[in-house]
Image (cartoon, rainbow, N blue to C red; front, side, top):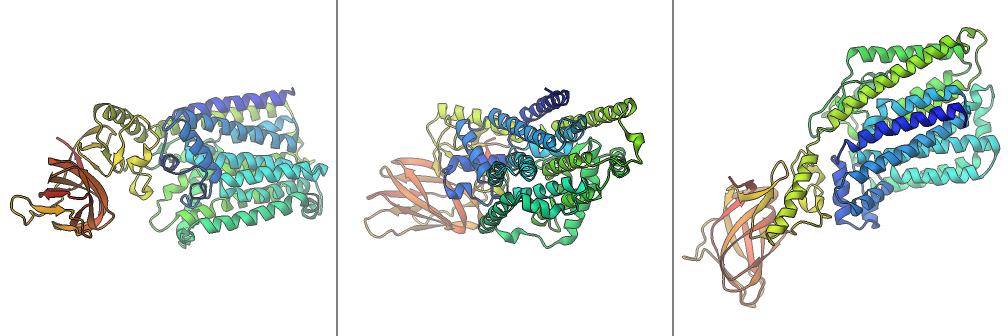
Length: 593
């Protein structure tokens, strides 16, 4: 094996160790739990599951992989972490293949490879499982298709067109942003010929690679149609001012510091993900690295101005659609500092750097020819970059591990197992703590969705005789109903509200509240006296009915009611069932003191 290949393998191995530490040091976060909830409550092969509008993403491949892993080991982080490392290995090997196709086993190959393997610009998009299921398959496809495109235009072998289309389609199944792949591949193939002095590079590459470009454009057009049919386009922003501010911040506080291994420091306000806060020194270093790279490359290489223009253009183009979809006048600029939108930029920059290294040298820059001094300088800069990058990765991990979901879920899983062992009563459904998953993710923020696949737990029901709840730390505790509203005392002396089923068409009994309730998930404490076993249906003035099982004698049941209104309606559904319902509270659940 050539020495450069050995060095590349060693670098990839070191990267995998670093990424494994990062992956296994993380945990489920936000969208990860949405994927878990959907996998537990829907069929994995149903179109509604695979082609869901997930916050503007169409990602059936990611849904399927996440669903299979979740079904096999619900809420066990080990296997998502393993999937992250495996996918990263595919990306790294695919990139190495592409760099080898462009440069061969020249030592200079190690420079773009080292940058792509260790820059912190790719770290946040890796650590977050849901984001990585989008980006990592796309990155592997991006590097692979670029290599196939180069080989196709170089050799004319049609098998490269076939494999490129198959891989491209695979990338699209995980992330709609993969639609950029054929355009990047075309640009890279053109630039390789351009820097070598071909005058009609665009026409030649189009002709030689038509077996790839035409089918790729057809696949892209079809996927755009699918995307537009699935995704709600009303979320696109027209606030161009905020989009510009985010774009500018992404360069000054994201991309440029990342060129020097920054940002070094991160901040986090739970439940938000970490964002980089580069100190002035690393920002200055980043600009210095960029300036030196541009100056030295232009002095050393011929015809690489177009390479720099494509790099700058892609750095802008890869972000604009995201900010148009994510930004508004209320958007925090820190969104641009999360760095999770840059993994594909890292691969593109590495490929373009390889193209630039393959350009002919200028005869006027002999002082940059191979020498011991040049080797020492390059090695020293590479070591400094890796040290800076690893420090940024370590500080990111410290911030990333501050995840309230981990203790919450682990406490909840233990508490659910203990609850099942101690009582056969079902649990009322509830929203999990907002630091774990907020109401905007409804219904996946419900405990019944998040823990749907956990086998050792009680059933979730619309009513229960034993009121328990998950507190803010995930522990299952005894609960009470808060007195937000009260059922008004009923009109029948000694009974309250008399409800019976006499075989006639259902006649619900209306139990007024002492004030209106806004739309929400409410819990009512129902104290009743029944003459037999049976069932009744209860609902708020505006909301669905909840079926409640009742038993003879004086009893108490807690009922979950969705909706709004100023009264609760009750109707018996079992023949010859009669009930007396007394006054009681309606409100939220609160831990019993």
